[in-house]
Length: 447
Ligand SMILES: C[S@@+](CC[C@H](N)C(=O)[O-])C[C@H]1O[C@@H](n2cnc3c(N)ncnc32)[C@H](O)[C@@H]1O
Image 1: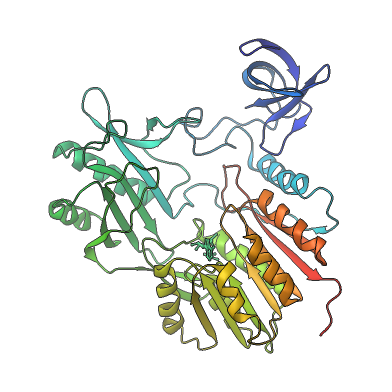
Image 2: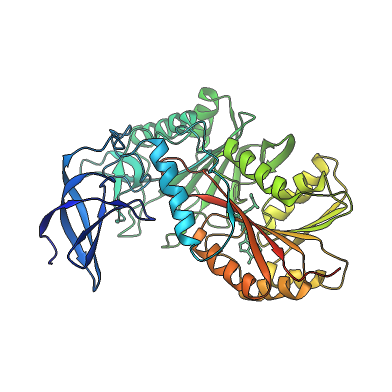
């Protein structure tokens, strides 16, 4: 088999990345864009020893699971991966992604918690800006497997008012000939826009540039047009990097934070603080994690990787004391002000790396339960070893990357924990990403 060759293949099933799987002789073919049950023409894109990758260039008999993508940019845009199938099939692929990755573990699987809204749910949008050959300002998402920006009008999974704000800013930059950043040459001014919104209808806009600039007119026009904008920042990032936001923020308008409401508590959110991107499913995720935790009033709990304290303060409602640990100083500042805002006194927030700061709690008091919600790379081994050493009877592991969660759970199982229950939660409809709540308990726990 060679790159560029085409084959007629029957797709047996989906793999964990949502690719269609076919077989020719002893080779497995992973066909991007093909759907289970279909016969397709697949064009080979890369060849490996026991498998090849291909793209679906023609469907010969269409599966009832296939769906016309609802977004006109789907074919090119790197944002979504699941728009060529119906939502039921997407949920099956996501469940399969979790169960295949957790192969070898013995646990109870709960049904995936599906989203009620599969469009317009994203409460944080980051959009890079560029210019075309005619010097017209464009904005959009990065193309699949590339760093080229494809121009879009609006993003279907993003909040609609955020789309309108971005479009408004695009028009302003065009009309007033604001210099736009050229990534290749590393010259020009305007790089990206971030818009964040909350369930309380508060919007925060962050304009990312390479240098300071007078945006007072844009701020005036924007806030006249969109009353819901409560905060506008300039973020100055002069470095040639893929990291969009620098540490240098300048408040141009309104309040430094916007306010979110999660499971009845209020949260002030800074531009650099982590917040789940799907509000309704975030509530579903936290509710499931809290249900699995089975909290009791005499418990001492740790919430590791706590962000602005959104799980921590919800835990605090039901336990004796909870400790939140987080590396981002602004998030800890938010967490402490959120604690005050909600009149909570039985939570302590600790700034620093979980792998280092958890050690301060080793001999402090008995810890009955720990929540982890790490970033995609999972937990640090030093952190896991301390959890094991502390002999904490129960763990609720919230993960946005089941591959690294499986790696960490394996380490915990070898050390005497047992994976009991798993619930996938769909926070990112129309994309491949899936969130998972895993509950582990210590086999040999003795009080
Ligand atoms: C997936 S977010 C979860 C945040 C929070 N639990 C929530 O639901 O909003 C992961 C958090 O871990 C933080 N983080 C990353 N590495 C860390 C580390 N080594 N120690 C402590 N916090 C870390 C990030 O800043 C981020 O806030």
